[in-house]
Amino acid sequence: MTISKDQIKKAFVSDTMNIGDYVYNNQDWYQEDTQRMRYILVTRNMSPGDSYADFEGEERQLKLGQEDNRFFDCIEFDNEGGYKIKDEKRLLELMNMTDGQVADYIDTNEYDWIGDDYDHAMEYLFQIMNNWQDVLEYDTEDYDNIDCMTITTRSREWKVDSDAGYKSENQYEVGYNILMEYFDYLPDDDKESIHKRLQAVGI
Image (tube, rainbow, N blue to C red; front, side, top):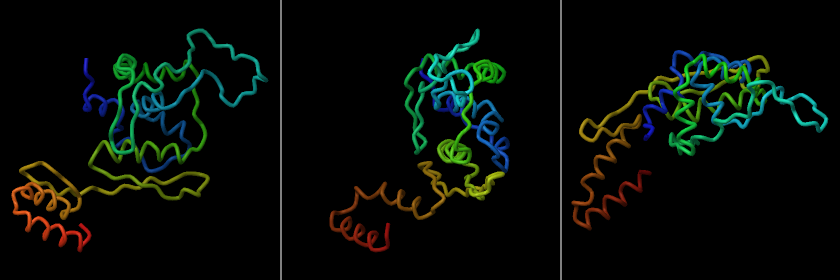
């Protein structure tokens, strides 16, 4: 079975209505919806129990039903909206789990990922939300505020080439791509002249 990008988007990308305006700590913020919890499971190599507890070198005893996070690294997301499926069976299992099953898996194993709160939340906003949906662009403010970080949004305004479907918020970029469709059909002398003129204006 081939997992489509639309299926991955549905499983890992939060609805914009669920993001909220503030981040207080990354554990609570990621647990606000299932999409973010799935992202945690595929990006954090976690073992059960309190990761800050001191076991003095002794082997940690698992409780009944606990295990190391089996979904870690089954998919890898990049910073440009791309991804690489590394274990299709595990990924499909995670994607098919209900909201309650995902929450129960984290709760049963007592996973925690408390750490660099704001950096960790920004990772999801910039890597996933800004690359996988085109309604809002997210940014942050108040990074130095120890109580909470503010999440800001900007509505995106796209310019779309109705023929090719290419879109950008920069109308000049759309125009450049339209021009490039015809570039190969131009005489070589015209190509060189156009190239120099575009370079001169930083395009």
